[in-house]
Length: 234
Image 1 (cartoon, rainbow, N blue to C red):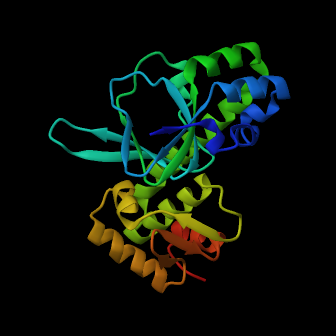
Image 2: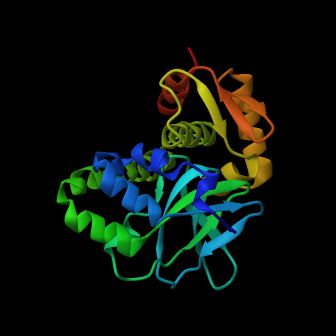
């Protein structure tokens, strides 16, 4: 569902991103090309095999990138939270993605036409290093997850996942609130919801997280990270 851009201060939100380096006239021009999307139910934003025509900035909620098989099996391979873009590759890679892009609910995004983003970048090549840095951070997080998650216990794996999601949501260095459901964590961890609930309960018993409806309170991010690495709680 698309709403008029006045529902969100598009210019202010874009100014917080890599586009903030643009001068006010160019930023305003880009903002005029944007649209605001709000979703009250989970929605398929872009099916696999279809070219991505919009680059979406997550304002609220999150976008999952899901790989599906012909037999119905699916796995969540990425989760993009507030402040993240889904995805830069859509602007610079011609081939359509092999994955579905699915919106959470409720959610709000600022969507920019990919052609407008390409045009802006061509006119302002100094933006490329900042974009590449964002892509690089995402790649490092993916490598960190895939490389370390297979070498640790299930509890550590869940702790690692929560810590990575906290970082993608730009939660402060010490504590904060991770907005995520237990079913979402189960999909990302590739385990059953029952198993995820047991693992989350163990982390809560260790004082690493506090469970609440639709969110997790993290009192000490450093302590959570240390447990995900070492498997012990100080």
